[in-house]
Length: 219
Image (cartoon, rainbow, N blue to C red; front, side, top):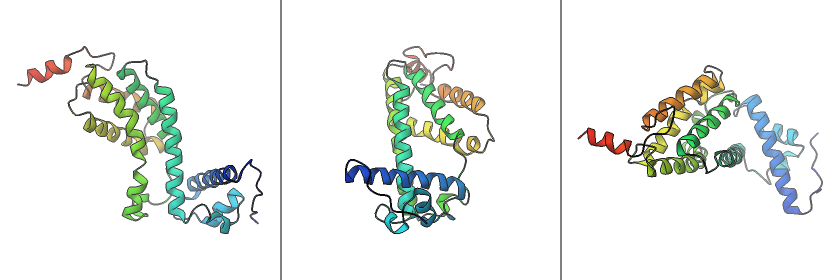
């Protein structure tokens, strides 16, 4: 029988935050185990050690839990990316690292059982769920901007280039999470493909001005 935890933190705010995180931890574990459609709030409450009625004080429904958990996990991952990227290496090296970190994360996350969430959530909620991808865009856009500014990358539209790089990465999410693709091979292939697309030799830094030279040759 689930129990209502006593306040053990230094303040009510800290207690609520700790309880919220425990609920989200339970949600994440059960989501991977049962899938979204079969998962119930009663199961989440039992896993988190909190009465289902008390759980509603934190989350109104499964959709709210799903979005909150996705947002928290995304924010944690992006924070790790920023730590790992640093700012002293070239844009090319930072892009290599960004690619590797994302693909490695995909490989450690097995697919959620059941139907794709696109077919389960309302269009509005699915768009809200996808909005967390903007978190991944910011550090990548900084890399693309830096590479374009110093001549490492050949692009005249960093925003579109950022979107295309993300699309290429996310295309590997399912193949890596299901084990269809090997992580090392996928990382090498995607890195080589993207660096070539950006006009940067996969084995090293592109020479300054190489982009303008290619552009001129097309005239």
